[in-house]
Amino acid sequence: MEIIRSNFKSNLHKVYQAIEEADFFAIDGEFSGISDGPSVTALTNGFDTPEERSSPDVKFVCQSSSIDFLASQGFDFNKVFRNGIPYLNQEEERQLREQYDEKRSQANGAGALAYVSPNTSKCPVTIPEDQKKFIDQVVEKIEDLLQSEESKNLDLEPCTGFQRKLIYQTLSWKYPKGIHVETLETEKKERYIVISKVDEEERKRREQEKHAKEQEELNDAVGFSRVIHAIANSGKLVIGHNMLLDVMHTVHQFYCPLPADLNEFKEMTTCVFPRLLDTKLMASTQPFKDIINNTSLAELEKRLKETPFNPPKVESAEGFPSYDTASEQLHEAGYDAYITGLCFISMANYLGSFLSPPKIHVSARSKLIEPFFNKLFLMRVMDIPYLNLEGPDLQPKRDHVLHVTFPKEWKTSDLYQLFSAFGNIQISWIDDTSAFVSLSQPEQVQIAVNTSKYAESYRIQTYAEYVGKKQEEKQIKRKWTEDGWKEADRKRSNTQCISYTLQNHYYRTNSFTATSAVGKRNLSPTQEEAGLEDGISGEISDTELERTDSCAESLSEGRKKAKKLKRMKKELSPAGSISDSPATLFEVPDTW
Image (cartoon, rainbow, N blue to C red):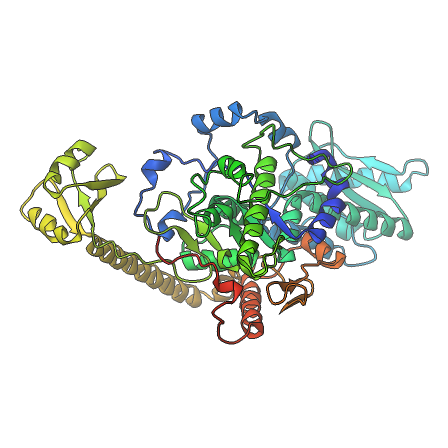
């Protein structure tokens, strides 16, 4: 079923129902992940750290190669802009709700206007000399309206925002009762004010009508974010294939900007999506690694139809035609998400064959798949296969790696010539003047470093020295930043602005939407699974779904809930470990 701007609102209840009934969600954003400047391969190298790989720049750009690729796959660019569903991130939603709240708070009396401008007062306002004639003319027209027995409405000519503000302020104290004021738009998007004669009952009715319209406009603006919030609040498993960029873009676009610190990013991500699973990492790990040669999504889907796997049989709900895998629709986000879900089911069911007795169906709540939770595949990193969202990342020694700086004119052939005496090497470019060079024998590293001591055009250092200097530079920068903030705070304190500073401090501390502990969650195994399945029902009530229409909790609240959920899992898990426990049958390895 295709949902676009025109039918989103009418079908939202179906989406909520599907979220409530789902066992898991498969996602694909079809984000291009394009870069501004060098190619992706130039911006990434095999010795990136997880922190370096999780630092995208925030730009809206069109890269010709990406546009060509999407066009070749039948991507409809007109549909994106004409029929795309709007959305807001959490800060934008918070600001919009504050604007609506501020307008409503101004209507705080029986005679208050239904629509007023900020700074409305109940006393005469100071009108600039060049605007007095304009306001006098407006007042004169309103006097005529009130004295007329035939006319009930007065449409003023379109005017500037400042003039409308003066009108609202003037009418607020001059005519506390008997009129209703609101701003409308012409077909040319010009704003004008309409003044109506009303009694108290009619005024209240119009206020309620306007309030309902504002709420509808607000929900329309929040748009697709309501779906993302509902998925996040469900706490259910979210699956993707090579999904790091999908997760990063989703958090950034629908919640808040990504933090620069990797640990903050991990905490933020697990607050939004407490359970993630990457099918590319799953397929690259035992027991699948030896029997799956190609982990690209299209090839993986084909391989999982063959022995020893048993592909699931899919029955579409009535009125919801399914994709047909026989006619591939690759790189359409919905289709890619669909076959990602099929791949997960096939691999999860295969894990059941290792049990005694074998289990044909393994659900998304099974402990068998827990080792793959919250580990996102990292592409083009030689010795760190995944980003671990729930703990420290792998720390490879890299004692065979050198960091080399050289003139901009150098090419790959120059580096091969420089290290020709050291046998096979591997080069990973960082930028135009630096690269990582890995040697086949770690004991040769110091020899290579010594050769550059007296060199003028290039410099070689060990990877450990390179990392140490980067950390030192980062600490110096952090200290400078902290000192700068301390000095700024001291100055603000002297000018009695400290309260404003605290209120407007980096908004992520008070505007982050986190996953709420939704529905009934029973972490103890069910009888049917005989200790293999946890009993997380994942049900979400209508109230909880509607709660996604408002700004959710702050980041601090999200952190508390994330930690509480982790404590619950820890407390309800059996103490110690059993050698034949299904959860220990499959482990994502610490080394690759």
